[in-house]
Figure 1: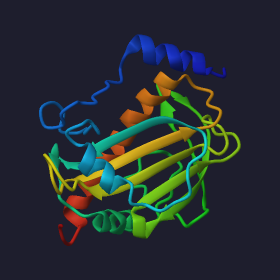
Figure 2: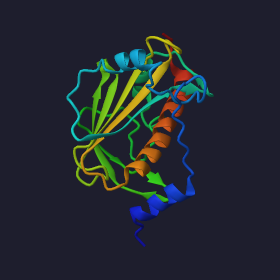
Figure 3: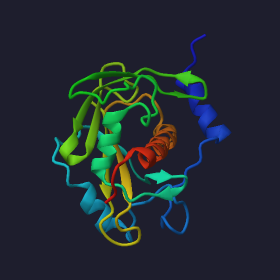
Figure 4: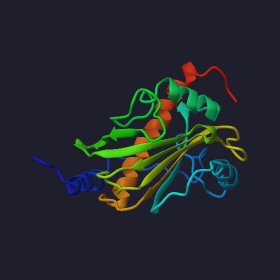
Length: 213
């Protein structure tokens, strides 16, 4: 029997099995997630906006910042280390089924198929990696639940000022064009999924990276 996104919505909103952990102060609350609040705005945002890539279309759905951790400890590795690791093995860290083992080429089709609560959806994307800027953009293809032309940008950078200066951060920013899923459900699932990405990446970086910043 085909399951609808309504059941997904009810499971997420009633079951409450995904926990939102955005903290106003990253070091006072959750070592996994860092907000772009006033105390981090200058350092985080200045570093995160260095990528020169085409402007995203659609409306912004979310903008998350995660520490890249190893065993709950934030890391000081560089974005170059990140891309070296992702080139070594992409789907060792990227958590969505359908991701390739090899780092995706520019324009490569990725037949992603994320799942939550036993419900899977097709999420085909075209990859646009910008290695020098330490950005990977995924552009939704026809049939994606966020709507064709939606984007998710993954940007890696070191915090440049304030608490946690030098720590490695993953910023994930999504713009959607015609989503089929309620925003709050979409954001809850995405936050959990991209935190997994940051954590798996940190665990892979630690044994494989050959240098630190």
